[in-house]
Image (cartoon, rainbow, N blue to C red; front, side, top):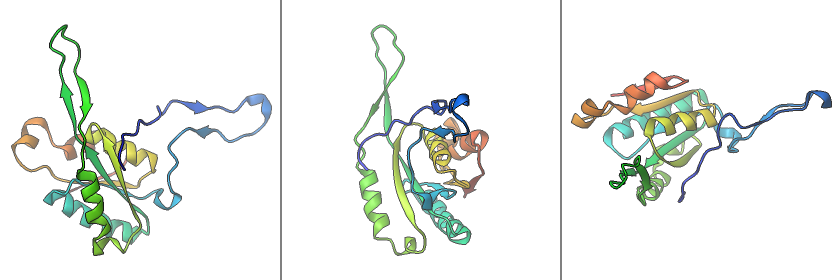
Length: 173
């Protein structure tokens, strides 16, 4: 779980040679367990709203007979370079929260009903949730609503994700 994955660009594909006959066109992607294809992606950070989203996602995955992909997006802090006015650089901050969340989830009785996997990512929460949803061909993304003034000022994750996602987004209050 430690480390940072850099996803392959979506436009990098192996194209079959038309002269060589009918071959399947294969995309280069991260391989993922077939049990989790068409599963339910849920954003989880341990907050109360993400716990409610997780509970809903568990029920959704159980009813549909699919796997649950729990995503924790680790912290990335912008560091600006003052001299020369260069664009901000993002620095990965060691985030041991994913390991703690993984241990808590592994001990949770309520997750015994569905197959699940915990995925750690770093970066923009909306982008990473949608990217994981794309990789696993998820049927839906479940997130908790943003509480507090930060969400009102900068925009909520749920609102931004609902506007840009290519699959259904379920927002749990």
